[in-house]
Length: 301
Ligand code: PMV
Image (cartoon, rainbow, N blue to C red; front, side, top):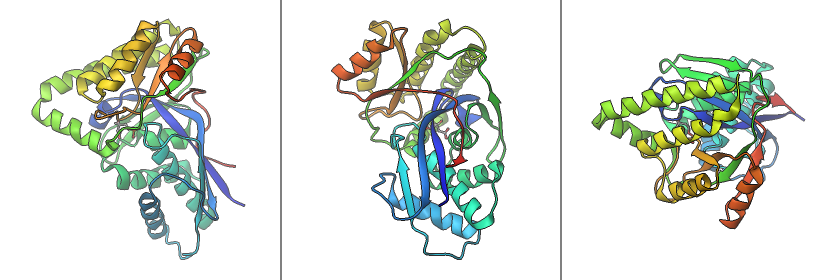
């Protein structure tokens, strides 16, 4: 039976700024969504989204078969900045291309996944679906609505252990957070451009870090978080958690669109003694787990 899987992702640096043409550095994670034709389990990504995605695929790939129900199994947290909807878009696109067109072409799969992402997010950068499709570490830049430039980057050193801490599912959607930044940008263009320029420097710092020594990673994570706070995408509750992590000698940042009314989605956190982060998460009743970065993109299982 044909089964396709695609990974979730984290954004090391560049979220939001990437929508405005700045670079972002993303990495796939070792959590995946698996889709096949068959009866669905309880999968919590919106049914409405799945319905619209399948309709788009049927229309664009001229699929006549209307009886195909889907089985979707995933261990990527939903709606928390870990790229669950992008992984689903990529996996569905690949499944349909493979089954109905007998084609396995990552560029075609990714283009279609981007169109599906647009149903969900309006005007996404395309970074999430691209890293889920190609896997690894991705240096990504959106040039225009149609043109995206990206290259895979291979770290030359062993990466430090990154821990994911769930600060709480945001009440806002990515679409709403992106719209909020648009509003901020329209009204305070110079201020926002300054933040984006600083974010670009931090993103370049992360890129260097993949090739060199990781002693700077805490500094970069802290700087990135500071800039995301200045953009206004981090809730008070999350700021408070991040301050506590810093006091413990660690560093943490929001990864993804963020959230301001309640949780801000997943945090990527680093500590030279990772157990301290797990203990912290446990005592604050927050989910936490470690991730392996840079694994394979979409594949047939
Ligand atoms: O959907 P999320 O939480 O992974 O956020 C995506 C990252 C943004 O830069 C905020 C939006 C985008 O399209 O790149």
